[in-house]
Length: 403
Image 1 (cartoon, rainbow, N blue to C red):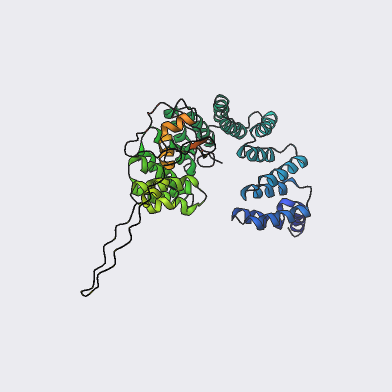
Image 2 (cartoon, rainbow, N blue to C red):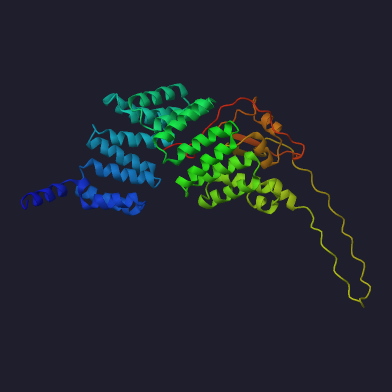
């Protein structure tokens, strides 16, 4: 035993992935201490520059800290050192897919599948990329193939469910999300995806329960509160909705959709000052109404006051009419509709349809840019929402996608 121990220590020292730098880097990565993790993996690479796994793990760290370019560089170097290992191909493809380089991602997935035709994860991830590319038929085929290869994997069910939901096949989508949850009930994104689909069926109470479960699993994830706030708002519970949107904004100040919805619900609740501060323009107009003040009580022996100079009130200027040089834009987010956008910008949804040459008010796509003309304010009391038609749901990447 005394002779075996020094030999084992020597073997571990020669392997970069078993050294102390690697172990410390892995610990820091698990604890989300990304700067320290990068330093440790860089030291491991300096000690063992031909060890691909050190590049893989430093690339994972760069990906986690939001540096996709350097992550891709490390994954590419790992592929050069060990071209038969599927892991760096899958990781590089995931980064490509997430940032919108779908064709490059598919090429990497193809290489993995060519080397291992029964690689279920590669089929599932390629299906997700085809979904993002809106190639729904191929996405369903890939996810189904992944399920055939490994029926106990949860992610392929989730990914296929998103495709069915995008196609408006809500019952099938809910079945897939339920199967994903049954196989792995610990991922909050599965519950949010099912909640979004239940919302399309107006099953608001069920959607709220799923969002609550997602919040329980990931209490620091703002998207769970934002999704539940949307369900509360659709149900008509403005107070609960506003509270959830506020929590979402506090957790993630960059979540623009939560700001917009918080402003909308604050306006509905009559808190115009808060709604105005959140960028809801109609609320700002309400604040411009004159404030009535009580007259001061005159002293008993006050001399006759000089007559006040009457200043004529200047009539308000008419709002500017629409011209092509005076337009704003709005990028469609998950949960947007023409009526809500019109309320936000004080423009009729009918004018938005005409300005953007839309034939169907329910055909908006996430990421689509709408022109917002400067026109006469709408009458919020008389304005009615556009008619509902059967539509496809666009899922927002980053909010409900499993990554």
